[in-house]
Length: 139
Image (cartoon, rainbow, N blue to C red; front, side):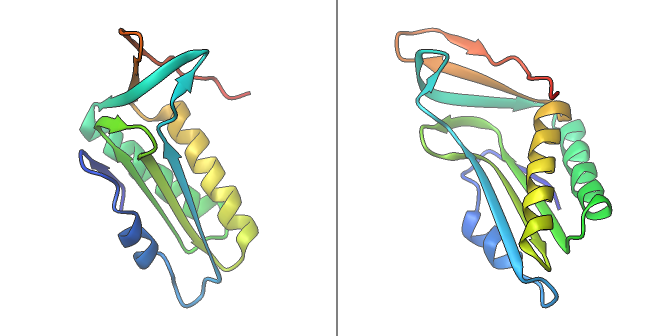
Protein backbone atom coordinates (compact mmCIF):
# COMPACT_ATOMS: atom_id res chain seq x y z
CA UNK A 1 0.00 0.00 0.00
CA UNK A 2 1.48 3.32 -1.11
CA UNK A 3 2.24 5.95 1.52
CA UNK A 4 3.06 9.62 1.81
CA UNK A 5 4.62 10.69 5.10
CA UNK A 6 5.87 13.92 6.69
CA UNK A 7 8.09 11.84 9.02
CA UNK A 8 11.24 9.86 8.24
CA UNK A 9 10.46 6.82 6.10
CA UNK A 10 10.06 3.69 8.27
CA UNK A 11 12.76 1.69 6.48
CA UNK A 12 13.03 -1.08 9.09
CA UNK A 13 9.25 -1.64 8.98
CA UNK A 14 9.24 -1.80 5.17
CA UNK A 15 12.05 -4.35 5.16
CA UNK A 16 10.34 -6.42 7.86
CA UNK A 17 7.05 -6.47 5.91
CA UNK A 18 8.60 -7.31 2.52
CA UNK A 19 9.59 -11.00 2.73
CA UNK A 20 7.17 -13.61 1.43
CA UNK A 21 7.54 -17.41 1.60
CA UNK A 22 7.56 -17.67 -2.21
CA UNK A 23 10.12 -14.87 -2.64
CA UNK A 24 13.88 -15.27 -2.39
CA UNK A 25 14.77 -11.65 -3.14
CA UNK A 26 13.95 -8.32 -1.53
CA UNK A 27 15.26 -5.16 -3.19
CA UNK A 28 15.21 -1.82 -1.39
CA UNK A 29 15.87 1.42 -3.26
CA UNK A 30 16.27 4.60 -1.21
CA UNK A 31 16.48 8.03 -2.78
CA UNK A 32 18.32 10.33 -0.37
CA UNK A 33 19.04 14.05 -0.19
CA UNK A 34 22.46 14.83 -1.63
CA UNK A 35 24.46 17.98 -0.87
CA UNK A 36 24.81 19.32 -4.42
CA UNK A 37 22.94 19.91 -7.66
CA UNK A 38 24.34 21.42 -10.87
CA UNK A 39 27.36 22.91 -9.09
CA UNK A 40 25.41 24.44 -6.19
CA UNK A 41 25.58 23.29 -2.57
CA UNK A 42 22.21 21.99 -1.36
CA UNK A 43 21.39 22.13 2.38
CA UNK A 44 17.95 20.48 2.32
CA UNK A 45 15.00 19.54 0.15
CA UNK A 46 11.28 20.01 0.52
CA UNK A 47 8.59 18.00 -1.24
CA UNK A 48 5.01 19.00 -1.94
CA UNK A 49 2.23 16.96 -3.50
CA UNK A 50 -1.40 17.00 -4.40
CA UNK A 51 -1.85 14.17 -1.91
CA UNK A 52 -5.03 12.42 -3.16
CA UNK A 53 -3.69 12.27 -6.70
CA UNK A 54 -0.15 11.36 -5.61
CA UNK A 55 -1.41 8.47 -3.45
CA UNK A 56 -3.60 7.19 -6.27
CA UNK A 57 -0.67 7.42 -8.70
CA UNK A 58 1.67 5.58 -6.33
CA UNK A 59 -0.92 2.84 -5.73
CA UNK A 60 -1.40 2.50 -9.49
CA UNK A 61 2.39 2.14 -9.94
CA UNK A 62 2.49 -0.60 -7.31
CA UNK A 63 -0.36 -2.45 -9.05
CA UNK A 64 1.18 -2.03 -12.49
CA UNK A 65 4.55 -3.32 -11.23
CA UNK A 66 2.77 -6.46 -9.94
CA UNK A 67 1.09 -6.96 -13.32
CA UNK A 68 4.17 -6.16 -15.41
CA UNK A 69 6.92 -8.06 -13.54
CA UNK A 70 7.23 -11.48 -11.90
CA UNK A 71 7.17 -10.09 -8.35
CA UNK A 72 5.29 -10.87 -5.16
CA UNK A 73 5.01 -7.34 -3.76
CA UNK A 74 5.86 -3.70 -4.40
CA UNK A 75 5.68 -0.91 -1.82
CA UNK A 76 6.38 2.78 -2.45
CA UNK A 77 6.71 5.38 0.30
CA UNK A 78 7.49 9.05 -0.40
CA UNK A 79 8.30 11.70 2.14
CA UNK A 80 6.70 15.15 2.06
CA UNK A 81 7.91 18.36 3.69
CA UNK A 82 11.50 19.12 4.67
CA UNK A 83 14.10 16.39 4.14
CA UNK A 84 17.60 17.01 5.59
CA UNK A 85 20.82 15.88 3.91
CA UNK A 86 21.39 12.10 3.70
CA UNK A 87 17.81 11.25 4.76
CA UNK A 88 15.51 9.20 2.54
CA UNK A 89 12.96 10.99 0.38
CA UNK A 90 11.59 7.86 -1.27
CA UNK A 91 11.66 4.11 -0.74
CA UNK A 92 10.73 1.39 -3.22
CA UNK A 93 10.67 -2.15 -1.81
CA UNK A 94 10.10 -5.12 -4.12
CA UNK A 95 9.97 -8.83 -3.26
CA UNK A 96 10.27 -11.50 -5.96
CA UNK A 97 11.22 -15.13 -6.35
CA UNK A 98 14.48 -14.03 -8.01
CA UNK A 99 16.63 -10.89 -7.93
CA UNK A 100 16.41 -9.91 -11.62
CA UNK A 101 12.68 -9.11 -11.67
CA UNK A 102 12.97 -7.43 -8.25
CA UNK A 103 15.68 -5.08 -9.56
CA UNK A 104 13.82 -4.47 -12.83
CA UNK A 105 10.53 -3.68 -11.08
CA UNK A 106 12.21 -1.38 -8.59
CA UNK A 107 13.97 0.62 -11.30
CA UNK A 108 10.83 0.81 -13.43
CA UNK A 109 8.71 1.97 -10.47
CA UNK A 110 11.21 4.69 -9.53
CA UNK A 111 11.54 5.93 -13.13
CA UNK A 112 7.74 6.04 -13.54
CA UNK A 113 7.32 7.79 -10.18
CA UNK A 114 9.68 10.58 -11.23
CA UNK A 115 7.96 10.85 -14.61
CA UNK A 116 4.28 10.69 -13.62
CA UNK A 117 3.50 11.22 -9.93
CA UNK A 118 2.48 14.76 -8.86
CA UNK A 119 5.19 15.27 -6.23
CA UNK A 120 7.37 18.37 -6.56
CA UNK A 121 10.89 18.89 -5.19
CA UNK A 122 12.37 22.20 -4.04
CA UNK A 123 16.08 22.56 -3.28
CA UNK A 124 17.45 25.03 -0.74
CA UNK A 125 20.99 26.30 -1.35
CA UNK A 126 23.86 27.11 1.03
CA UNK A 127 24.39 30.55 -0.51
CA UNK A 128 20.71 31.33 -0.03
CA UNK A 129 17.72 30.96 -2.28
CA UNK A 130 15.81 27.97 -3.46
CA UNK A 131 14.54 26.47 -6.70
CA UNK A 132 11.97 23.94 -7.83
CA UNK A 133 13.57 21.01 -9.63
CA UNK A 134 12.34 20.54 -13.17
CA UNK A 135 11.13 17.10 -14.17
CA UNK A 136 13.18 14.89 -16.45
CA UNK A 137 11.73 13.25 -19.53
CA UNK A 138 12.78 9.61 -19.81
CA UNK A 139 14.09 8.65 -23.21
